[in-house]
Length: 179
Image (tube, rainbow, N blue to C red; front, side):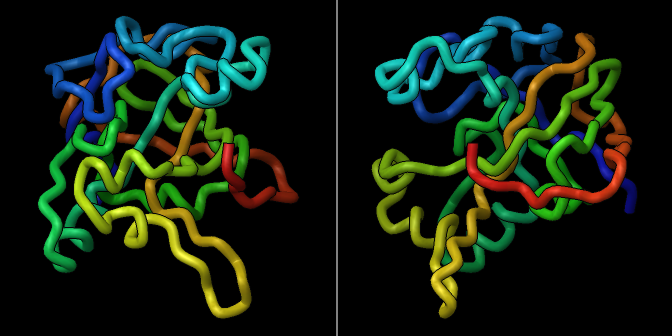
């Protein structure tokens, strides 16, 4: 199975879930047109409060639909857009990509910057869900499963059904950390 976009989402408000659209426009250096997180500088409310001049490394949020499959097996009902992602994918291991991987999504290119670090809001969406998307391993390592974040390196349109092409950066590859 080749990698593809399952669904695309945006929301003009800072709510938790995003509305599914037929397509979205990605604006170079900004993010998803019409989305609350679109901007050159950080748009996430807690980060704006800490330092509004930080660069926005979280312009686009991608989640693999396979996570929803696993969550359903644990008794949760989660659909594309529910966890606030802009792009839902299938057939690509987003979490294993290195920093700087470039994904061609429709006519746009998104460069991966790091892992999403979900917060307590996820438990407000469905109680107990946070422990299924962030967990600690026996060695104390934190595993984040709630997708990846990126910046728009080339603007364009992305839609459900579009294939995803991955271009890895030159080695050495740096593992993703939270952004």
